[in-house]
Every structure is written in structure tokens, then in C-alpha cells.
Length: 201
Image (cartoon, rainbow, N blue to C red; front, side, top):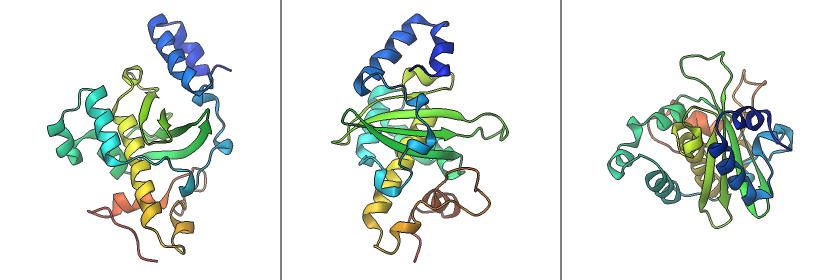
């Protein structure tokens, strides 16, 4: 089944269409944008086992990011999205032996605008195969929104490994006042603290 997004942008760029379909071939031609948020695993246990090095390698080798830029990551746009709490509706689903990681990134200057949709395909051994975003640069497979989603997953993965048995249940809770979206408390940790660390129980 094709998503409305795919049907729309097929008319605009046959080359991008072909590449998009090639990427979907990894996951039995399932278009991640057709997955319902209710069918996704929104718990901390469903987070793909991605590490910082996996993400940096993907961003540097696949995009215009340089090693020097990644060393100064707090100045990059993806970190600002993460820090500002603009990542919402994060979830995962296993398809054909891959993790499909989905999320939405709100516009920083247009809070009422429709959020950008992002998906990443990650192997069980932590390799990031490919990604896509509905932003103008999304077909290049790496953009700030992809980076933000990947590092949100990396932080959640570390949080899961470091959390105590009593802390795990709280790790992905929605903040108060956000009952209409799925958003994790661990992302609030990043926004509210100058350093990334687990909250006390």
C-alpha cells in the first residue's frame, strides 16, 4: 500500500520515486508512512540498538556533515530540534528483520504547521541502512530531522540500558499537558538539563 506522500511525490520526480521504492524493498515494500501510530511500539523496550558511532558514521558518510561539525554537534540544527522538544510521535516496528523507526519533527517557527514525518531503517546489528523525511532535503536520506530522530533513539537506548528496574516504566512517559501526542520524558531531560543524564527516581 502506498502512502499519500508517495503518491504525491511520484508525479514530481521519477528518479526519487525509484530510489524510494528501492529503500522500501528492504522491508517487504512496506511504506513506513502507511503505518498507524497505534501499531507502533512506543515503549523504551522497542528502541533500536543504535549507538553514537553508528549515527555519526551514517551522517558523515551519507551527507554533507563533516567530522569537525559533528564534534561541535550542539551547534547543529538536529541537536536544537532535540533540545527544544520538537520530536513527537516516536515509535518502532520490526519488519523483515529490520527496525523501522518513525517520528515527527515540529517546525520551530511554525508550531501550528503540520510536522515533518521521518523514518529510518536500522538493522538488528545497529547499522543504519537508510532514512527519509518529508522535508525538501529528505530524499537525500540525511537531513537535520533524520539526525534528530536518530539521536533521540540513541539517547533512549542509553537511558534504557542505564535505567533501574523502577525507572524503566517512567522513561517514556508523556509530559503533563501533552495528552494529545506521544512524547517521551527522556526528551524533556535533554531540553531541561545542560548535560544529558538520567533523572533520579
